[in-house]
Length: 94
Picture 1 (cartoon, rainbow, N blue to C red):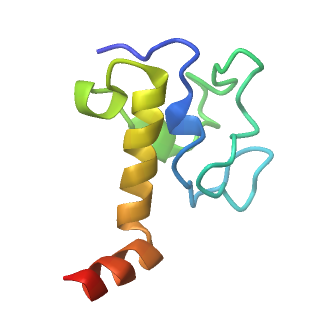
Picture 2 (picture 1 turned 120 degrees about the vertical axis):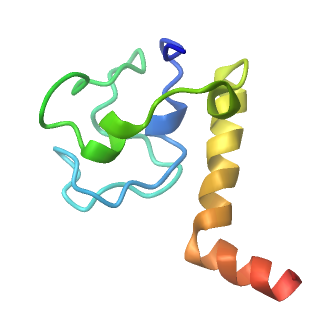
Picture 3 (picture 1 turned 60 degrees about the vertical axis):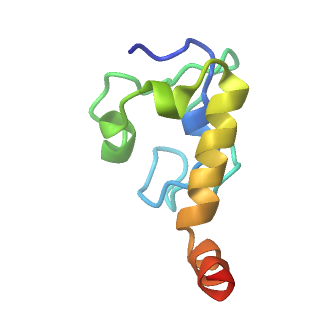
């Protein structure tokens, strides 16, 4: 599967803990990566400066869905369910 041009859900929805050029402390969930262009394309795509976590993330049907909105919601839910707070809330519910 190829990335949906202009989607950028994976560059906005999840937190990234590793340094990104221009964001030395990474980025929080829901915050637009500083390396996104105005048309939602990664300015670092294909460069060595791109964080490994970004390069290693591969698009798939489950994650990307049929639209950018579906992709964002999937990644937002994944972020919430894997965060420390999300795990704490889930353990209280279970």
